[in-house]
Amino acid sequence: MLGVTAGVLLLAVLGAAFIALQYTRSAVLKDNQRHLTETTNSLVREYNDRAEVGRLNHESQLLETADTQSSQASLGNLSRAVLLNVDGVAGGFYSSARKAFVGYAFPTGSGAPENPGIDDLAAGARPSLLEAAQDAALSGRPSERVIADGQTLLLINAIPIRDGPRYVGSAWTTMRLTSLPGTNRFRTYLIAVGLGIAALACVLLTLLVVSGLQDGVRKIEGGLRNLEQNLSSEIPIETDPDEIRQIARAINRLGTTLKEKIESEKQIEDRLRHAERLAALGRLVAGVAHEVRNPLATIRLRLQMCHQDSTNSEIRESCMVALQEVERLNGMVNRLLSFSRPVHLQAEPTNLGQLVERRLGNFSEMAKQHNVKLIAKLNHDSSRTVQVDQSRMAQVFDNIIHNAIDAMAGSGGTLCVNVAIEAKTAESREICVEFNDTGEGIKSDLISRIFDPFFTTKTSGTGLGLSICHELVQAHGGEINVASAEGCGTTIRILLPVHNKETAKQPA
Image 1 (cartoon, rainbow, N blue to C red):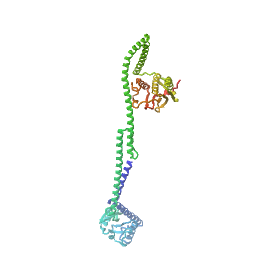
Image 2 (image 1 turned 120 degrees about the horizontal axis):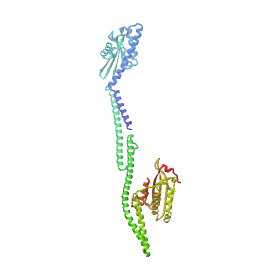
Image 3 (image 1 turned 30 degrees about the vertical axis):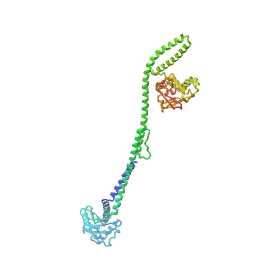
Image 4 (image 1 turned 90 degrees about the vertical axis):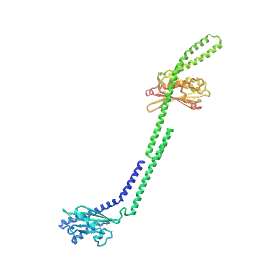
């Protein structure tokens, strides 16, 4: 757009300059002098042709015998024949032998008298005309004169005529100019108006280009301010010049790229902070668990001895209650120790679909007690095997299933587990295990904390179950994500990588 506008602007300026040059005084003079020279050369060529015929007939040159009546008539006819169709030009010959003008003719349609004399022809400029003709004949070079007479100009042109080694005279022409620029006011006004219009058009085109650029720059500035507040905003590019649209597209791409990079860096930072918290808590938990385990073993031993030795039924019942609590504490200590230890996997080919069905079967009685329906939806690709640690992955599934049943324990519901292969990129694929329950859901402000150690929404929970699941899934190179809304249930997605060599394996 800007290139086209600049091109139009340049053409307009060049056109105005060309018109101005065409109508300047010097340009008009040169054009008429060139026309006059061509006419004079025509006279010289006609004379030379006539002279060549005379030489073949052994006749004398016309300019050498110009004092005879026949030569005068012949030269006059020759001049009239050449100037017949040349308006406004008079011409003839000059004889060096006679030192006078011979065979001249008036221009056609000029209103000249029937028997004009040379003084009538030149209108008082005979000395200048004679001087130019003599100069050409004597010097052997063309001669030109420009004579100003009031508001008009008289142009004179003379070209020597040669006969062998000597010059016998010259051919001359003259014309009167009365409408040169500067002398014709109306034409001058027209030229000035034309140049003014051309200049105005140039100014308007320049303002149009500048206005378009200013609008585009303001739009880009506004778009950059919007990007500072929201990287998702884009600069509209409907009717702007091509250059502005290219800049706007580049800025829009930059905003999208920055948004993606910021989101990626935020995810990495969240993972690093989570890993740091887990590492610190792991060290703390390991120390506490070891310190608590030994006293618990002593308390359990004493309670067992008291239970065996006592004959009082109330004491024996109290011992049993205490032993149950000790076992619960011992289980908690074991989970703490499991959380603090590095994860060592023993991967083997596993059919996740079958593993999910077995784990759901283990919870069938518990589900019936809480009026929960268990459903497994297995895609045909779910029969493919993946390399996972079966016991660790079973621990992950058990924890999620247990939490889902607890979330629906009050009013019942449905837990649906889907297993399917998903394409991650053109070269890699993932197997997705998705748990959907119809429970109470999780508040939006708590979702980001559910994988934190010791965070729980249960009154009797330890807050380690999902943290351990998170660590185990990540140890397999996978991802675990939660989507939930209060009153709308919860969805937990586990994505595990499927390598090419694994997708080709079929279950035994």
